[in-house]
Image (tube, rainbow, N blue to C red; front, side, top):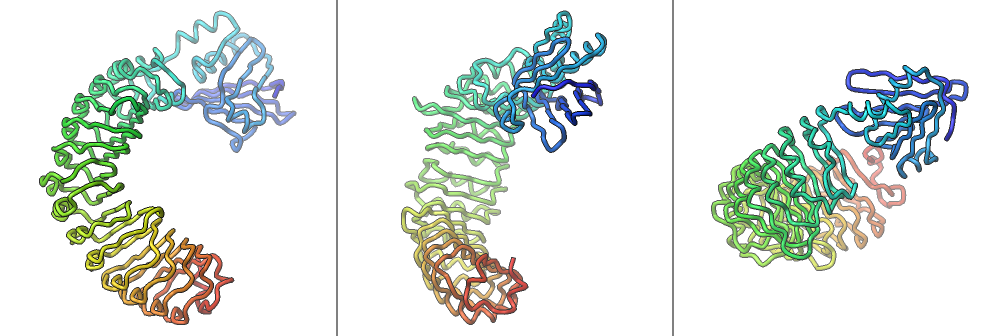
Length: 481
């Protein structure tokens, strides 16, 4: 796109610098501005509905025109790879516009007007920038200017797997306000990570198949860390010093396998324990005293002593939710009398095994069996007298037991996306407390039992194909959502 700007303006409001090129007769307008306290910029073509963040790859400014080369995503959005704008401006205005454009685009801009170039390059101030996004730049070293970002709070460095994090952490350690760091690496995690003492949030992605990924002992120095996310497809080794991160509130380990430090129980601020792929057989008895844990996730089937493990969990005072993501549900889960929510996402490759002991957990209020290979449920489900919410989704179940009608406290029932479900039991009409019913995407289910007209407490029904369903109670018309 090439046009002649009949109107060239710039303005500065607080930390926001803006330059406008317009041609009123042709109804053309190009506006660019910075995003305060970041290295990002904003480009708007004609109106706000046609705008893009970080649209510009490179800028060339001469005394009479400007050329903006767009990144591929922006080029696809605007339908052109370049904006070329010609303009006429007095020398003083040109210099002022050049200064503002340099403030907006930084190192992306090349000034062809001589002396202005040196003046603006020297005038770039990085000291107020709080947010830095260098993701996907394939960097090996951090740019020199990062050391000048003394107000920096967030550094996003993912997508630079060859970045020298040993040196990067030395630079980042000079920034006293850095609270959030995200990076990916193909190398080992350096000891210098521990120098980032102000960090509160850490996100690491590791792609190094050559040896177990080891976190350095120095991580224990991150005493302000509240959030930690680590992802790798390979083995991860946590040092015993990891248990010294006593401010940690959220810890997510996504590894091929990983070890549980012996004093993990010292992380007393954690509210969730996700043991997916963690290679432990028993839990330290002291974990029973973790005061804030309310949710426990077993995301993989491991060789564990579930009698011992569940005995420890049964003593955790606030645990109310357990999630199990494998098909052989341990009978010992019944030891956990304090839980009221059980979530099962077992996968459809292996038949789901529900132990009889599970149906003795009459304190359960929510039972969610989703994405599991279950063809039928035991009649024993009727023993869950306290159940208020039952979800059976994305399974291969073909029918429901009559005993489901004994769930006298049930208020929410979601039986959706079950390809083989063809009939429902008449006993569903006994659910006198049922308020919400979901029966979406069950292609083999064509009719409802007569008894469902007795669901007097029903407030909401979701059956997308209800016009094709037989035996729908007439008064349900006002309940469909």
